[in-house]
Image (cartoon, rainbow, N blue to C red; front, top):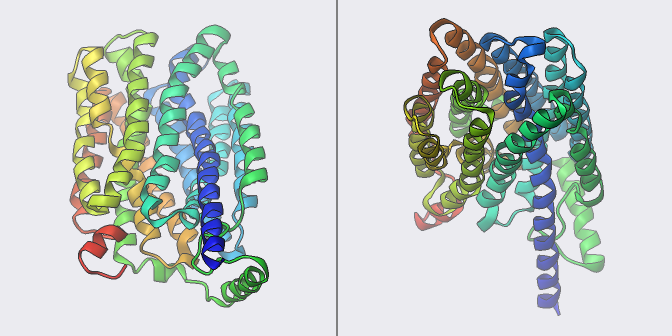
Length: 431
């Protein structure tokens, strides 16, 4: 009888894990759909705004700045109050509203304000989502789940759907309409989170039971959680892996934000390709994003986080270099699929490695700090420097800056301590 109840509890936990993954996949995917929209709409906005490379970098950077501050605040707040679901719902509703507001703006300053507010709302989504996902995940699927949530979702909706749908909407109805429609998926996702997401996963922990025993254990767990001392941020920052991940984050954000912000303009302005060709090539980035978004962390479950991060980042160095030197759209698209591996690595340093390093009571704080530092130093300053360099020396400068950011990540990754449970068990080390 006990075995049957345990099997039933496991089945409930596994079903919830899959359901949660789907909902959070959509939530973070639409975050990146909204974030990517500006890069694809920039060529259409020239008649109204005449955006320079520096201004495009500022628009991308200010979103990263507010995203960073919001992520750090939201992670700390959720660990303090012990709630994530209400913060996540509010963030999804607000980022959809502010993204749509970009279509109402008539000047650069207004657009800048809308992007800043959008980043403020979006910054809370990742630390809330990943902390919910890691608690609901089986150990054997932890890396894969977190990769699907953060990497593949952003790749599918932000990298494949966004360039096709946003460019089509802009060609057919105008760029303002492309911004307006972004409110619809946000409302749908907020409803799904409200209905299906739980603050704590059912039956996942070893003490899970049913009936009166479950009630007693749940009450005991609640008392234990309340009695568990909060972990100060300064203690989290003493952990070697956390510090290295904080250093990796701005370098990788520089690679990502610079590449995704300036590649559409590079293809249309420097290579003189049409909007259709540009959209097709950018969609190849999305295909790679989806593929490597789950493949990289899934592979890391088996070979280890550290070697996966080193190897796949070495490939990512080649992607912006290919943008500069490859002249065939078909060849460039193929190489992008093979070398745009960095988005799968994001899950490793921004979520999985910290989650396997820090105490559970400090998880959302650690994720928020790492994401915040990365967005602040790499997502904010990276595109500003790349925009200035592009106006000074040409758009190819942005691509070399992106490649340099990834190269630094390779060097830093050698300092990480392995955290993958399967690898540690093979080595005879207790996780």
